[in-house]
Length: 233
Image (tube, rainbow, N blue to C red):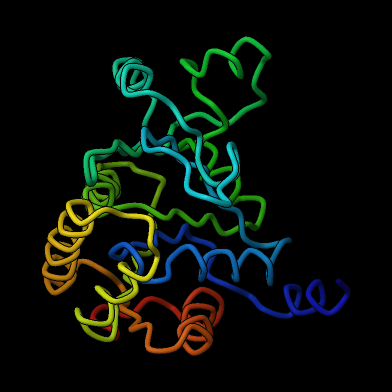
């Protein structure tokens, strides 16, 4: 609407891509969607590939591109992904190329499908957009390696969404009702690893999601109003 457009014009954000990570059920997807709804003319996001089954309410091509493990591994061989990782027995990856799919590509899914490439990130940034990437811990490590390469044109900001406590995170995860006990335990083990990794100082900012509205405001302020300060919390 006009108010949103005017607000986007007034703000002068740091246009570098934002890599958002955090354990399952911490609220990443909700926060990203809130950002996209509030800033449709400024923020863009990538759609990752995954081998996991769609959850209720998820949409092919919007939530993820859903592929088989064989299809995913074929994409790895083709050097499709900027980053990819296995999480809870499923593969996730952000592809390198973004473009219009042919009907054959859409049906086969063995070709790269509207992912986010290095060049796309650069191009979108040049156009004034901020690219949001919601990725897992292994993906963060790979993006950090990409950032450190000599001559790399991708210099993302890294942000971690943290739960108020591990008990709260477990309650949120169980409250979804979408995981069996084995899956819950694997996700909790992964969450501990991600929380430990966050303590190493690899992220530019950590936001504790006590309250979704407050976390959103802090996230928005970080993206639009603040320069990165090492160690800022």
